[in-house]
Length: 166
Image (cartoon, rainbow, N blue to C red):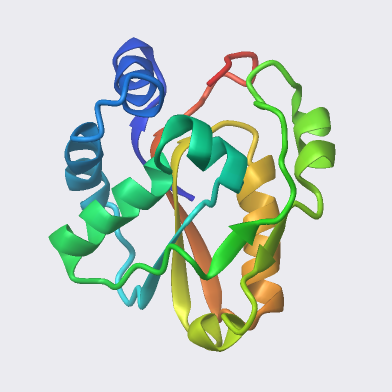
């Protein structure tokens, strides 16, 4: 698990403006900071997927935008379609760690025919904010079941205070 910054007022503002304010250019800014934390030997970037209804309402997946910007910065390929969120989940902001884990269990799967793309590879799972780890744990499990050699979480901000929301 690697994070560019600790979650605080500035990181929260950046993330909220990116996710809910439509400031998609912030993905480039975030990715430049995250690129410093990229593990050596990374072979593929996979963004945490959003459910299609969330993408439809928001207009984009912020993790996919960050992942694409990381590809431009590092030349490590990104595959935004390999992992899918197959079940819509509620916003996790007000749910505790145990509840978050329950909500995302079974919510992620590899896209049909995509397992071969991660098999044997050192994968970096890209996300914006790491809070309890429930989402990234569920994504990591799906990637490892598909045969990824390793999965490292790389995010913009990590919540250090477990009582904080993202």
